[in-house]
Image (cartoon, rainbow, N blue to C red; front, side, top):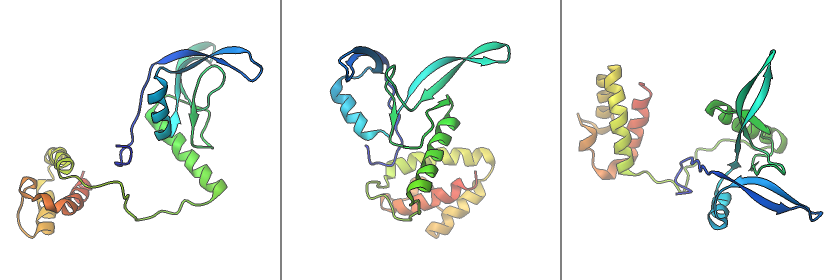
Length: 188
């Protein structure tokens, strides 16, 4: 699962843990409410452990409650990231999360070099006939809704040399199905 080409989110409740600092003083930290063994496995797989917290922010003459994702922890809560240049926190939204990651990657490239793209395929990812057919069904419904059936059928005919439905394509044609799906998705 870890190398199948998907992005995964693990979500956990929080619990308070009592820890001891270098001076021998106890303090309480908010951390994921997972037993040590699963936490150890997940921690090796993830790029970010974010802490979601609601904060009161001054706006004009009043205050408002806003939710923030924290990417850097402290003694109050556990959070962290493999991205050295990620912002310490962003206001909660998918776009803000993605932009923070993109910006962190760009900064890392600026500071450490690299960043050249490659056309090499992921050696851990394999095309799966059943997954492609599920995707094809979803895409075909969208194509129908957009009135692009004739163009999509022309793409299928061009690839396979005859009029054909996705359901008629044999299982050994996964590469061709993947190519056709890519072209048909461009119609959306």
